[in-house]
Amino acid sequence: MKKPDHPPQPLRKAVALKYNPAEHSAPVVAAKGQGHVAERILELAREHGVPVQEEPSLIEVLSKLDIDQEIPPELYALVAEVLSFVYRADRRMKEWETAHG
Image (tube, rainbow, N blue to C red):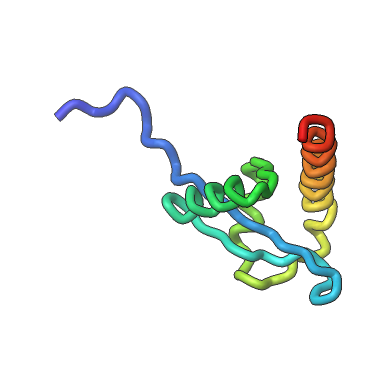
C-alpha cells in the first residue's frame, strides 16, 4: 500500500463565544467542537451572519474551556482583539446594507 504524499490534515476546531453583560462579566464559551461539529458551528455562524475569526492559537486555548465557562482574565486581551474584529465587521456590514439596501 502506497503512503500518501502528504500527512493528513488535523481536524478543524471551532469555538463560539457569546457575551451578555447582564448575565456574565466576561464572554463565555457557547459551543465548541472539532471535525464535523466544528464545520457545523461555522456553518451556523455564516447562516446567521455571525462574523468568523480564524485564529488557530486562540481556538486551541479556548477549546480547553468548558461550555458556559467564562474566559479567564489572562485571555481578555486576545478575545478583545476578536471582539474588535467582530464589531468592525458588523459595522461594515450595516454600512454596506444601508448603502445597497
